[in-house]
Image: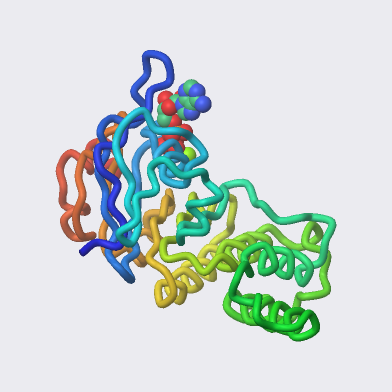
Length: 245
Ligand code: ADP
Ligand code: MG
């Protein structure tokens, strides 16, 4: 059974059908990339999935639980986390405090049985663990807003991981990055697949072809093609509308 299934999602903005009966699934451990020209409806689709926008039709199921009518916040609690194209980092706080806040926000019932001191110790340990996962263990005391863009994006990923997502939505994680930061982000995402399935929106086709198990191509709000990387590379319509060959 697929981990995640979106079925016939529809979103209209006035007369514009930005999402036109889109269906999409993600398997456990899979990186599923979503590509398509500007205005194709990629961000709208991610907003529908994360619950930032209400859908006009269709359904969303994660790990057997129907999320369609849930708030964005409840979807996170059920295992659906996202990183934002614009980073959600608290710029005036240290990396450590950003991580602690995120960990605390998601600690919920798992710490209820501890006394306060050990709860704090547990939170700190978890924050450190997240810093290690994204390679920020040497930057814990730095003020987040003063860090280079590429490092802030890593922190953004760590904040999304604090919720222990089953599915992680990444909307253009390499946007605005140079080649070196992009390559580091590719390596980070490759490591993340051990923890969560990933729905990746990305323009950098080198990154997409390195990371994706499957690629879906959106065009005018519809899925134009969906398949493995070899299939998408050779797909004539995809080449015409997107790969530009
Ligand atoms: P992409 O992320 O693939 O570039 P978007 O999902 O941002 O595409 O946009 C898809 C289409 O929906 C575009 O034509 C865009 O202008 C339109 N659109 C997106 N958000 C809104 C909105 N809030 N109100 C009206 N139109 C929107
Ligand atoms: Mg977009």
